[in-house]
Image (cartoon, rainbow, N blue to C red; front, side, top):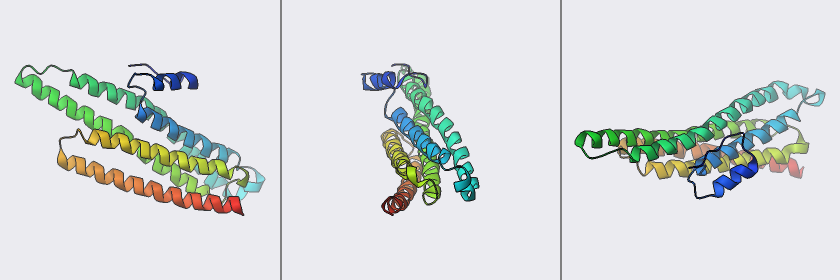
Length: 211
């Protein structure tokens, strides 16, 4: 398994993601896509300031604050995804010769599976907040960079869809059927909210582009 951090270059990340190493994988890529969503939204916010945008200054400031927080959360989730995968693989390698070892291994696998589900669920929640911010400033932010805001919406939705796939594949390994259904319901609701917000934001953005 390769090591990758935020200090690596884009070229290094792409090279490692293209390799036979399982990490960085789809979960980390999803977090990176979400970070790009925060970056584009922040850029639009930075270009929607000054006298011309005085009326929306509080709104823009709130979005900028949120984007900074989400950016940091995505960076943490990037690392957490790699760690959760490694923990799961370590759990699979635990000894299972005795009944005690089998029980201990089973519990470790269960906990590692939960963690591997929680990380992408958290990323989906980040994406929902991010795309809500996009929608909130779609009508009033700087029209000259409104297409960049539209790209933010696309990136957040894509990151959420990617995270959902990571949830799905890990849910398949979860033995607790009640908990599995709870997670399935939660991510279904999250994805619906994200898609609805993205569609509304995109319609507003397209209207402004065409006007």
